[in-house]
Amino acid sequence: MWRTSPVTAFSASTRTPTSIEVFQTALTVALQRSSSPTQTGSVNVIRSIPAVTTRRPQWRIAAIPAASSHIRITVPPCTNPAEFASSMLIHRIRFEREADAGLGSVAFTAAILLPLVYPAAPVEIPLFANRDSLDPLIDEVAARQRAVLDSGKYILGPEVEAFESEFASYVGAEHCVGVGNGTDAIAIALRALGVGPGDEVVVPSLTFFATVEPVVTIGATPVFCDVDPDTWVMTAETAEAAIGERTKALIPVHIFGNPAPVGDLVELARPRGIRVLEDAAQAHGARLNGTMAGALGDAATFSFFPSKNLGAFGDGGAVVTSDPEVEAIARRLRFHGSTDKRLHTEAGYNSRLDELQAAALRVLLPHLDEWTRARRAAAQGYREAGLGRSVAIQAETDGGESCWHLFVVATPERDRLRDELAAAGIGARPYYEIPLYRQPAVERWAPAEPLPNTERVCAEILALPMGTALDPAAPARVSEAVGAAHRART
Ligand SMILES: Cc1ncc(COP(=O)(O)O)c(C=O)c1O
Image (tube, rainbow, N blue to C red; front, side, top):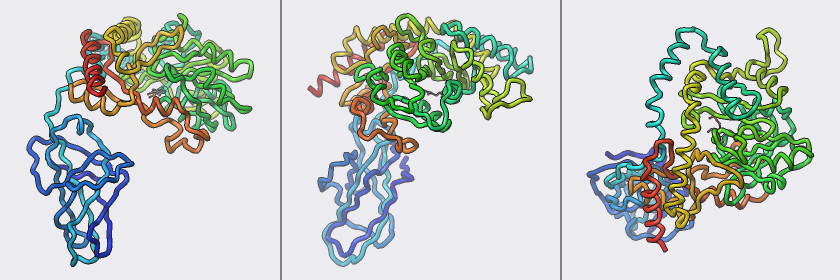
């Protein structure tokens, strides 16, 4: 039941000490559940708080073995589920040796063996509740995919063509180009909009890495902008602060399904010759002033990754636009920069939505509106249950109807609340804990000063259970648990 964490070995040496202090600033320890831990020694390991340096007598180890030996430490059972509710914790540890001379120079390595000891709370309300809506459709999906298998036509056939037309008309745009995934969709759309090396692209700092990654891979320069403190999306105000001479495009992200105010952004961008690309990977079925996300800017990209509101059974994505030139370039780029496989006008991608995925998506698309209604009803249930009295719920943009890809709240007590909900059998998870500009791959383009709203939101947000088949009683139960945790602290 014990597991040695792969990253917990460290070494230290000192000369004839009366006490030895070993600090590991970030020691990641894999925790494992155990029901009957053995207990040896009297060492405690606590959650790391970078500022904590206080001595703890209980960390005292009576004897330190001679040079380079292993110290085996087992941790007493922890009966506080909240403390150890997550599966990965960062610890700072310190060892003290009893004052005794005679060991001389001591060098040692220690391997920490950490049990996680508490009765695991069964997950009663999972974070994602969608599978029950999908199950009744699986046979139909399988039959449509079977027909594709029988046809022998797997790439760029009638299913993709039909889905492109159905999805374009669902979104209310002229064209849809099916591609391999939502990340390629952004690269292809940016290039189709005329963005290239040397151009700057404004991206919000609160989003999945895939929003910025294609900016870099096409050779453009990302410029990070802050998000609104309540809606958590790019606004004209936050974007304007990041616009410069070389700005060629803005990528508003409809984060967690909440539409960014694209109309305002277009108004800001158009007179400056800047294109607006919606990253609608999380926003199938969201609307702004009655218009579907995806039909608001110059072009939009979607992901059909399985967990998305319209998810395939593998990877998939799309570029949607009403601009025929953007469509034509996107079609070429997804196919090696060619229209006929004979002449290649640019180096593009091998990135197509495939027939099997398109066949599945055609079965699911007619259900998207009913699923969006279910998500919106769940969000309303949370509001009516008074959740907003204990935590801040993501605000919908003015005129916006979120499709609630995720239901996310914010609280300064985020990590504690997550642990408390886990102990109560309620799924909850932080998203985007690291502002995008702190990601090592793009930190060289970080703004001169941290972006305050992004910093706060990244530190505070927590997704709560949401889905197309969420138990109608769940919002009230979760809200009650959140409220109880909140009351216990105030
Ligand atoms: C905001 C955002 N943009 C882009 C993507 C990329 O989509 P994909 O995973 O299909 O490449 C995702 C997917 O998680 C996303 O959430």
